[in-house]
Length: 240
Image 1 (tube, rainbow, N blue to C red):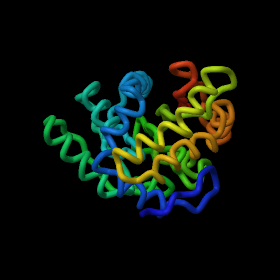
Image 2: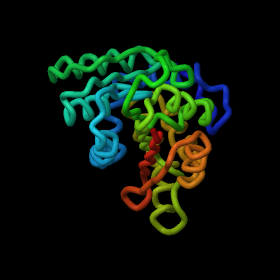
Image 3: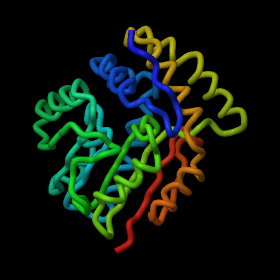
């Protein structure tokens, strides 16, 4: 049984997050489809459109996991070089199998999001889909995005913000806190991982607060909510 990581910003949780995702890697994709009722595919499509709008030549997908989003990006922009980075080797191994099965040429490399192993200004677009809330330090993660992004480049973050006030937000909170951990535990055999998920969402900054953090890093930032606020896309442009 892996230890459930701490949630929120400025937490020493890197090794716990790494161990947790290693333990659920084999069933991670199935769980994503079941737990989101398949809606996550549409969210990824919307985020990919933002990430590729400026026709980047090199794209880095941070916290790529099993490479779902990196594969989406390469499929939509075959001419672009797409690299996926993650610090969980077990997830990357599954991503490589998926890429090979689909004959899609992407590079998947081990790397820490808070200390990316790439030179300054190396990418035209940087993406992070449902991994940012797992960072131990949000400001440091954004600073790394800014560092490896070329002037004129774009960062796109797709995440779950905390449920909004109102009936739908209340229903989503009940689903997240009570239904999701049970389904996730049954399918993955690791109930603590799917207790961590809702806790990490509830502890994540509100969309405007994340936008403020991005602006403080230097990004010109905008965001939009998806599916009644269940997910959000933040876009940060690094002006030339």
